[in-house]
Length: 179
Image 1 (tube, helix red, strand yellow):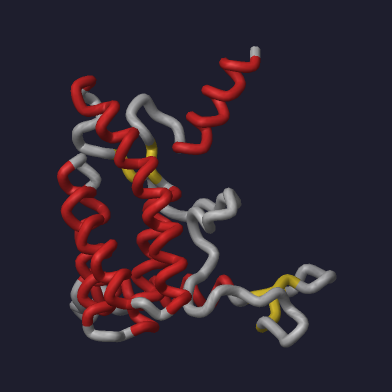
Image 2 (image 1 turned 60 degrees about the vertical axis):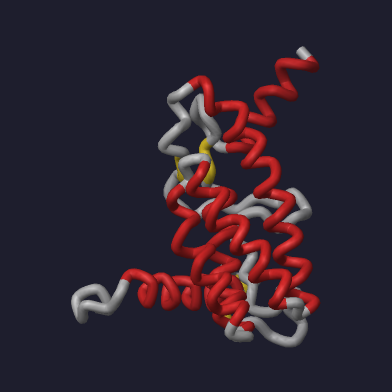
């Protein structure tokens, strides 16, 4: 409906992030029926749904694959992999500073992502990182949390150069070393 009404893509992305946040709060009962989260349901992080990397290694998918436009060029593949590693630790740091309420540091990290993501060909991060920076500077914590959730989802959906997801690549490398 929002797209038909002509809303901006960024406004639609905010609504989508809000829907993801709401869906993360659903609890499936023993009989399989979804129900709203109750007081005895596991607590989730404030305004950051569990999408993408949650910094504990747990993986949840939901995004289309995110691929660097430079990934086919062998000269950039090591740089892209280095960026992916830094991105994963930075997203964890973003979550931490968000939970601490340090929106200035969150804006700083979002600014890094806005520039660095595009530099290595991950243009999908540019708009969400810019919005995250903007919302953080404006002290809009809820909107910042929604954009952080979007960044987390994109991070998990990254396909490193050579195909497969980041976690599939790590698993493959681990099996190759042990076998």
